Length: 492
Ligand code: SAH
Image 1 (cartoon, rainbow, N blue to C red):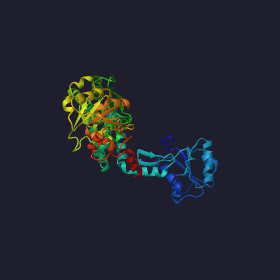
Image 2: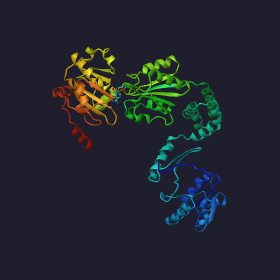
Image 3: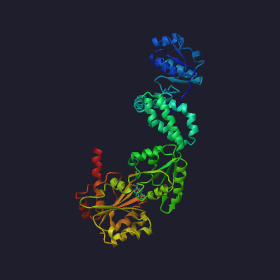
Image 4: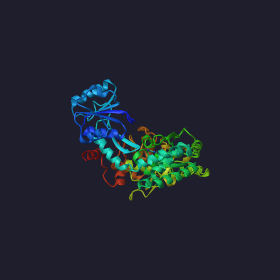
């Protein structure tokens, strides 16, 4: 941050504006609005400044600038249009430790005057640190259209009710929820329509209702595979409203960064073998925070209902009478397939797709290997990389062809995504050669061959699909080599 933003209380404080032209007039007007006691020092005044002077709204120093003009000032604005004089004023102010603004000269200024959106008592101030004032002004125009004109009266109403609100809703999260209701609900509409009495009545009524409601809620949110662009709008909204976020290890930092800043974040990540929190502890945390009246987001990688134990958590919440919602997310199979250029189904090559997990030894024995080994279907295998050997061996034993293509997608959709391609007989060995690490998803089936021709994200796939025959058969088109694609992108 280049400048430290602060809002100054100038009520009754003396501020000197040097320069009596239109710029000086504009500065004086804004200072008067803030209740400052304004002195304008100038040789000549604009007609408006003269009227204000005659009416006693501003004090005036006439004639050439004198050092003594600075004597009582808290702040100085140099708006003379004479660079030499402006520099002189800035230097003198600096010697006296007075904050000075030299109009249109960021270097000489020790404070800047921001572009302002005024919804008094709410004020939004924008600064580009003097680097791009036009951009700051454009932003101001955008915010003008975004911020409801009734925001000012709403803040005034909230200020009148403030101690009442504190008393009825001692818990911060409940107050936050109530203020959100003020901001998005009927109170603002009444104010916008010029019906302050109705607005006040509605605000009182909803305050009484909020005070009797103390139970919180849980939203189970799918965070997607990592790329924050794959989060749903509903998921984003839940993150913005959360008081507490219990998140898995797989949730990316970029997604977490979108959450409300002051939401409490608790990592309850689980990694095969290294449990940060047991499922029982997660349940207990959900219950504790919801019962305290908080809005809890349970944020899970991918989709909460795909190998995410979301079902167990809902059963627990239902049994304890906690209200909940579920926001789906893009599961790893869909994301990895998309970001590796592999259509999971294809009219010619795969008529079905199965999502399978093989996370631990025990789960291998419950899988129907004969069904999984069938041709013309795609397997999306969520798993620890160490399980690949068993998977390869069992699928081959049940008749899947050695030449079946696979793509192993590591860190799908994230920067650093890697795709390793090959055929089933070499999957475990290739994963070892390329040191594939978790999180990684295996896509196995005829369609995986398309990765070599349709890939578009990150680095090109590593490893060749050994059987060219298999590759062209699956894709139906000559594989396009990566450098060609890269060149095409470059030209575009
Ligand atoms: N609920 C999650 C899956 C949790 S199981 C979902 O719907 O995606 C965890 C497994 O998902 C990992 O072992 C890995 O196989 C897979 N996975 C999750 N995110 C991934 C990513 N970004 N890239 C590759 N695989 C991923």
